[in-house]
Every structure is written in C-alpha cells, then in structure tokens.
Length: 119
Image 1 (cartoon, rainbow, N blue to C red):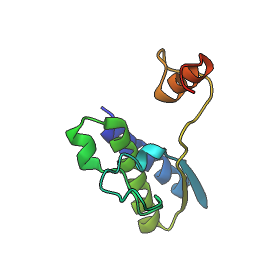
Image 2: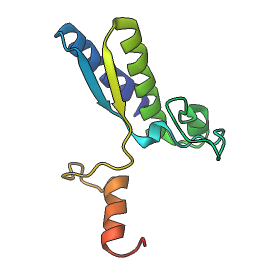
Image 3: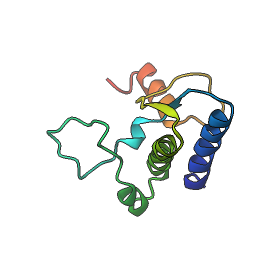
C-alpha cells in the first residue's frame, strides 16, 4: 500500500516539474530513508551514502521507511537520467496541522513530550 504509491507519486511530481521547465526540485524525504540501517557502523556518521536497509524493512514489515527510501532513490535516479536538479532534505520530525484522523508518529511524539511522558 505504501511502496508503489510513494515511488509513483514522487516520479509523477518530478516528471511534471521537468515538463514545466522547473530548474530545481526540493524533495522532503524523511530520516526514515536513512534509518533503520542496522549494517551501518555505529561509529560512522550517517551521510548521503547511508540508506535504510530495505530488505531489513521488508523482513520486519517496516513499510514507511522502505517507501521513503525507495521514493528518494527513484528521485535521485530520475534527476540523474533527466538532467533535473534535485535537492533532498531528510527531517527527523515535521510538525503542522493534523490531516489524518489518527496521530502520526511525529505528532504522537510531540504529544508525549507535551504530556511529560518523554524527558
């Protein structure tokens, strides 16, 4: 449910941008495209070479990190193959109005902080 729409949605936006003559696209990805990465050495800073381990995510049914990773990798491949300037940011948390009926992980963490449950 998450993998295919994430990749297709990202590519649709990039295609539309390219066809419209946009020079640069800033993609808001997620820290979830970087972790979980259990094979990455603990003493090495995570950089642009560190990706979430998609196979690990599949084995553990962690679909959100897998979807963000596959979508971001597709964005980079599209940029390379189509001469589009792509910049990606990988925030740890994004705050704003709650659109879905249930709290997402970021908003749930904020609620726990505000309730004094995380210190």
